[in-house]
Length: 396
Ligand SMILES: NC(=O)c1ccc[n+]([C@@H]2O[C@H](COP(=O)([O-])OP(=O)(O)OC[C@H]3O[C@@H](n4cnc5c(N)ncnc54)[C@H](O)[C@@H]3O)[C@@H](O)[C@H]2O)c1
Image (cartoon, rainbow, N blue to C red):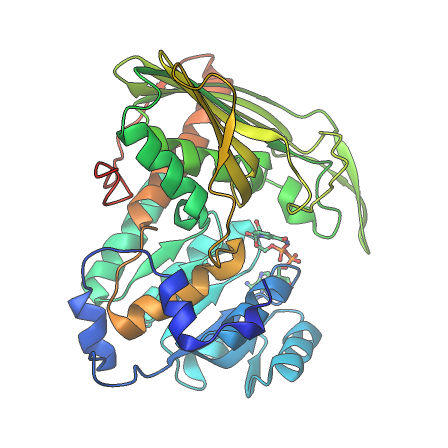
């Protein structure tokens, strides 16, 4: 989809999915059904690789106005500001927060920086959309969320996988009982790793928060919150060549296998890594294999392509044992739409299916997987999120 081709009506129809009204945010921005909602002023921090995907989507979003760009590498903020007509640019968060007023911080910085920057923005009264992870630990993330509630601002974290039509189709298929008694699921995602920044391999980085996070969000979103984790992680490639930096030591896991207990006997397995030969590289559109499979006593279901750029869902049941493909349309879904959805929620008061509690649950799984590796033990989880996610999942 070309984001610049989205008009306001189709943007609304395609993006925010169902849910209750969000009176608080609507009241804050003065939106009503008769009034054209005002655009949410957006400040973007981190003008690296992923900003090249976010900024065109935000620039085309009828609910967002790009006000400021910030990067500790000032040329990057300058370049993106010039390209997308962003009037203000800053080298540091302090200057961004003290500068031109805005409502929503979009945090696209290094993974290790998210927690600190998200907290600082919330303290300054800003709503936040954060790339993953939302924080470095469950307790720190929960503290930022509590602060956000006290400040009456919203906090959301990537990924956006639960907003795809394929996720909705899978949720409804499960809720309809089409697979019988669900038993097990598997998901995997990998490539040979980014080479443009070292943070992916430093402490606080790793393949779990960068790649596994998608499958963990999808499987907990479909099968429910996990109760316990057992995992093994490793480093397969101890040094890496990073562009403009040279060779670095790898500290964070670049190979991970995670087992989840979802309760009622349902188990799932997620594997991810930065050492996977992948003919598609970082490209999602061309991937056609089944990356997620779910099986029950009366059927099986498989996602075609990645959960962040899904191509369809294959279902086989007792009644129809050959795989039949469903949900092949994107309906406008793109993985980089999260900040635009956040702006839409704030502008219109409509709620979305992405919640900070879910992001924190996935973060807890990632931290627990590392603990399981370090201790050789299975780790109990304590966080929860509102589930099922797809509100009308039981109607079909
Ligand atoms: N690159 C992708 O395709 C992609 C896709 C999905 C999600 N993500 C996520 O997006 C985030 C960023 O990844 P990336 O690939 O764009 O990395 P990147 O290294 O290309 O960009 C990060 C940018 O943030 C800036 N930055 C770091 N700390 C900062 C600070 N304190 N204040 C201001 N600017 C700061 C850096 O200078 C850099 O320009 C990560 O969480 C990553 O997991 C990336």
